[in-house]
Amino acid sequence: MNALRIPLIYLRDKQAFRKEGGMLRLIGKPLDFAKDAKKSGCQLIHIIDTDALSGLQNNLDVYDGLTYIINVEVECAPSPVIVMKLLSLKCRVVVPPSADIASMKEKKLLVAKIPAGYGGDADGFHDVILEDADDSAVMRFATLGKRVIIHEKDENKMSGKTKGKIFGIITSS
Image 1 (cartoon, rainbow, N blue to C red):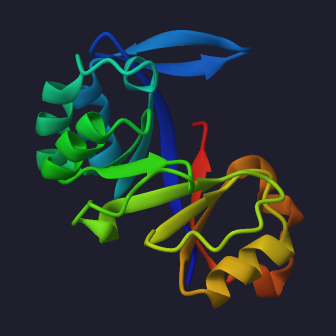
Image 2: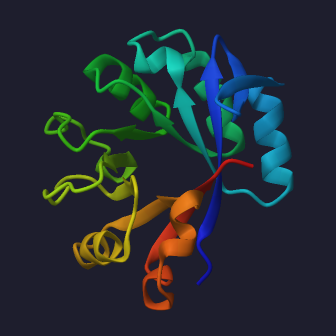
């Protein structure tokens, strides 16, 4: 099975951006991006919400519209209020594995963002995104029954055996 290609966008002030040369460049309305992505066969969009990472909730109405078009996963602060609102909108929510998820009911929508060298097991999370992925980390989390997502920059580091264990690849384009 080929890994799912997952485009990455940034969301700030209800607008979608791409990072180019370390700078955020406006690409337009998130709903327009989602419609175009869906038409091109995309099934999931990875969103880094710069406002929600700061604890702000001003983009929540955008997600309400996006989830009617396509599946989204959102990186945000591990604030229970923001996480619970995103889960209620059926967004996949990306938080650190140290986040308190005990009271959260939508476990299949929780995604742990795993830093390099993390020794824990991401218990309670359905999927994991590996930062600086390598073969051993992919195999370890796949063996634990997690769907593994990596970043495009790490794709060429994976062996043939490991590539078959990767659920998705976050792409910058």
